[in-house]
Length: 328
Image (cartoon, rainbow, N blue to C red):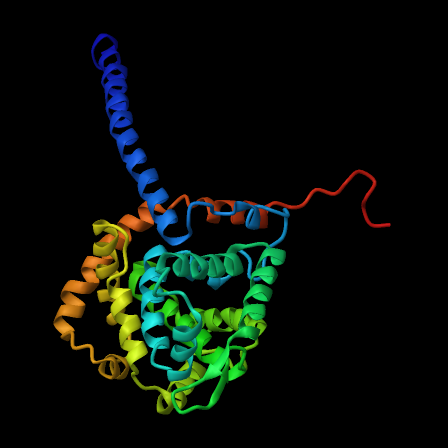
C-alpha cells in the first residue's frame, strides 16, 4: 500500500495542482483585465480610492450592513437599472429640458457616465465626508441650472419636486435591476421597503421633497406623476444616444445588450410612451438571459472591486485610539 497509492498520490496531486495553477493564472489575468476595462468605462482611470479607504471606522451614509450597499454593489443590476432610469427620467419634460440645455451628454457622454457613477459610488460607499462633499457639489451646480420649459414656464434644477422625480425614477430602476439579476439573492418585500427608505436619505440631502419610503409609496408616487410625463424630441434623442453609446465595438455591443434588458425593466406605460415596441417574448426569452450572461461575467470580474474592498475595510476596521487619548 505504501509503495503504491501513497507514493502515487502526492505525485498526481502535485501535477493536478500545477495544472490548476496554470489554468488559474490566465483566468485571473482575464478577470483583472475585464475589471480594469469596466472600471475605466464606468468610473474613469482614477478610482479616487481616498474617498473610500479613510477614515477607519467611518461607515459612511449607510454602512456595509445596509440594503443600499447590497443593491448598489451588483454590477449588472446597477448598469441595467441605471440605463432604465435614464430612459424613465427622460419622460419628465422639465427634467429632460434641463438636461438638454445644461448637460454635455451629447458631446461628452463618457464623462457624463463617469460623473454619475462616481456620485452614486461615493454616496453609497464613500466616507461620510466624501459623500457629503459630493452631495454639496451637486447642490451647488443645481443652483445655477435654470431656464424655461417648452411652454415658457421657468424651471430650476433645485426644485424639490423635480429632484424627487429624478431620485425616485433612479432608485425604482436600481431596485428593479437588482431583483431581476440577483438570482437567489433577491430581496424580500421588507428588504425592498428598507432599500427605498435607506436610499431616500440621498434624495433628501440633495433637496428632494416627498421621496417615497416604501413600495406602496413608490406605487402611489408613480401613479400620481404619470399625468406630467410625456415624450419629447429631447427624450427620443437621449434614448437614441444611450442605445448607441460606446467607444469601441465591444462597448457598444455590451451597452446594446444592457439597454435591451433595461427596456424590460420599464413599466409598460413608459415603453409605450417612448414608442418602444419590443415583444414580451423577445424581452424575456432573449434580452434578459443574454444580459444575465453578460452580468455573470461582470459579477465575476468585479468580485474584488477595489472600491468595494477599500470601503469595506474602512467601515469594518475600528479606529485606533491614541495612547492616553481615551475618555476621561
